[in-house]
Every structure is written in C-alpha cells, then in structure tokens.
Length: 529
Image (cartoon, rainbow, N blue to C red; front, side):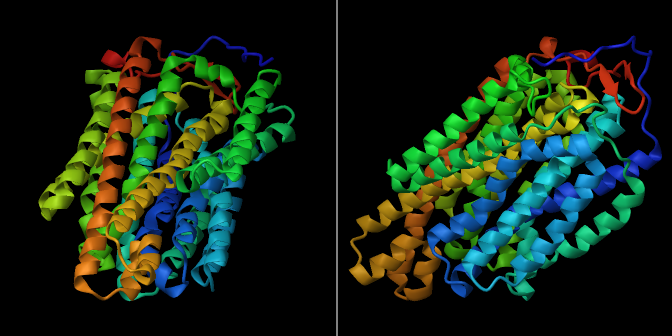
C-alpha cells in the first residue's frame, strides 16, 4: 500500500521565489499557451481541410479529436515519467518532438497523414503539459505566489485555447491551412533557447519502480473509453462500441485496483477521497466537456453560416479570449471573498448562462449578444478553471507534483476529447436529422448529410443553401443547450464538494531541501486562512 511521506517540523514561513523563477514561469506559460492554441487553431481551417484534402466529416472529427485523445491517454504516464527522469528534461524533449511533428502536419498530403501528425503532437504535448504545472509547483513554495503563478498559467491555457481561432484566422487570411502548424516551430525554438538556461531541473527524490503494467492499463483504458463514447454517439450501439467500452472500462477498473496495491502508484487514488480534490477534477472535466463543442463548431458557424472570412471569424471570437486572459487576475480575490466553492460554482453557472445566450442570439442575427455570451463564458470558465487547478496542485507534496498535475490535465484533455466526440456527434446528428426533414434529392442529400462544409462546395441553389444553414444552426443550438445543462450540474457539484474548511493545509515537501515548509496564506480558503 502507499505509505505517507514523513513530515518534519515546518519552518515559520515559506521561501519566496526569486526573480529567475518568474522569468522561468514566462517560458512555461509560453509552452502551455502554444499547446492550447494548437488544440483549437484548426477550428477555422476545417472548411479548407475539407476542400483541399477531401476529408470526410468523420476524418474532420478525428483531426480535431485525436490530439486531445492521445494527450488524455498519455498524461498520467508522462507526468510520472517527468517525476522520475526530470521535468525539465522531459519538457525539452517534448518540445523538440512537437516542433518536428508540426512540420509534418503542415505539409500533410492527405487527411490520414494529418491525423497521424496530430497524434504525434498529442504524444509530445503529453510530455509538456504536466511538466509545466509540476515545475511551477516546485519553483513556487509560497502559497500566494504559487496561486499567482498558476493564475498566469491558467490564463495561458484558457486564453490560448480561445486565441486559437484568432491566430488561425489571421494565418488563413494570408496563407494556406498548413501555416497553423508552422507557427509552432519558431515558438518551440524560443522555448528551447530560454528553457535550457532558465528552468531548474526537479524530480521525485525517491520515485520507486515505474510500473509498466499500470502505464499500459491507463493508456489503453483512457483511449478505448473515449473511442467507445465517440462510436456510440455517431453510430449507436454497435459491436465496435461494445468492445471499446469493455476494454476501456475494464482497463481503468483494473488500473485503479492495481494502484491501491502498489508502493509507488502512478496515481494516488486515495486523493479522490478528498471531496475538494474530487470536486475540482469533476468541475474541470464537465466544464471543458460542455465548452468543447462551442470551440470546435462555433468557428464553422461564423464562416459557413454567417459568411465571415477566417480572420473576421477569429476577431468575433475575441471576447472569449480576452475574458479568459483577464479573469485569473482577480480569481484569488473572488476566492477569498466568496470561498473557493462558491467562486467555482458561480463561475460554472456564468459559463452556462453564456452558452444559453449564444444559442438564443444565433437566431437573432445580432452579433452584440453573441459577444456578450462569449465574454460571460470566458469570465465564468476562466474563474472556475484557475481555482480548480490550484485546489488540485495544492493537494499533494511537491515531489508528486507531476502525477497530480497529470490528473488535472487529464481531466482537461479528456474533457476536450470526450466533449468533441459527444457534443460534436450530437450536433452532427441533429444537423443530419434536420437535413433529412428537408426531403432533398438523393444526389444532393448525400453531400448535405455528410457535412455543411462539404455541401456548400457542391450545392449552389440559394434556397437549399439557406435551408442547410438553418439545419446547422438548429443542431448547434441543441449542442449549446446541452452544454449549458451540464455546466449547471458541474456548478452544483463544485459548490457542494469543494468545501473551504476541508481544503488541505498545503504543507509542502521540497525535494531539493529535504524538508517541509509551512504555507503562506491560503487564497483559495475563506478569509485567506
């Protein structure tokens, strides 16, 4: 069984981070921002991909989904690899592979090669994401400083995801779709040039034996489960779905049971006995799950229905990005005044309201209300994500930061993967059902039912095009209302589970010093205690 670390008497105060740590933080924020941008930058390129590569609707979903799918499957394993072999080393290796895979994706000759390149990007991203957050955990020992650092990290993660369509739009306005991959290369070169001298190396002082069986179970279980959800949402209850579901659920059940018997588990499943920890993870997962459909399909709505260019569409999504970037600045104040549970609940509730506003505004044809909805979503989701991340990271000693960070990032990336699969399939199913109600000729219906992007490439009749656009909007509204309902459920769970009086005392184990230090004021507890 897992043995708790021995805790020595803590000093009176935690050491404040030097200026070098804050400069190094800038490198980590750059890395996570790029990864977040890469997760959404392709949204505006979907119409171009469908035309240039002849990609089907299923292939387009895989292009968007495989990146997060692979990330979710590998994060736990890679977080533990970073804990053992050095977080800085794993981060820099991942950055190198990320740059190389980006070059392949930029010049992919067909959809299959592009999907493969996106999968390799997911593998590389899985080495980078947990390393960034765990390095922050080891670089900032004072609780208040660490929360500020995590707020900046969260701004990079959430803001980057929202900025992806704007970056993609600016590139697609002047270049071909492969340019959205090429921008990764210079950024990764900067990351390597600055990360080597600035970032400190850190690792678990005595990580124990790495359990390959557990790693295999976590990877197989996570990927199979997401694939099962994706399959049933698109094709219903098929044999393929049943096999994937059995493999996914069975693999994860065996994985969890195995962790309880190991002296050095990949995941300390005992953490989930903590209601704040569990509430934070659930809040992150449901929030990202509900919003992923918006990020993936809203760009298509702006281009294919509203007729905007890629750059114009990206600019119209800017309120979401700006709100997500700004909100972490006052997240700590909101948590101290409201309590972290209320702040998380209110944040998720606001995001639900924002989704509902956009669903209503799509029928009005007025951008003002869409902009309001996007800003409300950004404020609410940004607030919730910053605080839930801080709860998760503060729940473990620094020596296990990589593994805990991987759990948090797994919830985030798993939410994206499952969200795109499920919410995307809901939207596609609703769109297809609406198209079939139009009773179109067989040759036209074949193109129309596959995807709106494909249909607009071959259908020129204005009345038919308008009907298909209405069918797409109706499908999006179903998706948005579903997401809003899920966010309300997550808001209630966050409010009830993340109790301020149950948060950990945050005594920290510093592997480089070999001692424990007392925390600073807890900004995610009521009254800062």
